[in-house]
Image (tube, rainbow, N blue to C red; front, side, top):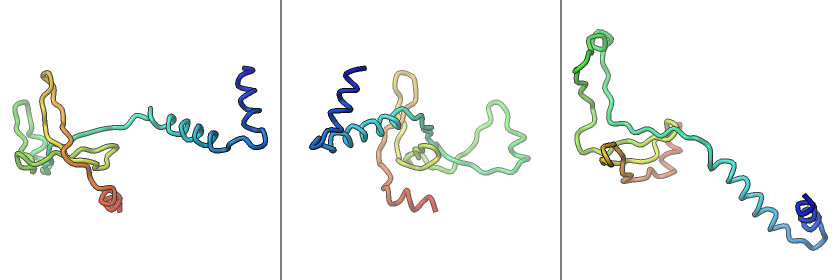
Length: 112
């Protein structure tokens, strides 16, 4: 506790560098957001259908998606498109290899 008090008094002394405090403050600010949970999702494709077709879906039904085979998948973070990728298989699980990051300017344009 005394060390913390000494450090505060040290930083408040005349001639003490103010840059060290701001660098430390920026580090703490960044630490606050590094552990925030984000929802990451990958879109394989989409399909629109009328309710009567939807009600007929059962086990074994196949839904034809609009995205052609070989086209990059859309990668979303918190429902915002941020990248394109391709499917990979890792130890019997699906994964996505990021192939292209969406330009930040284009991401902002997509918000409006």
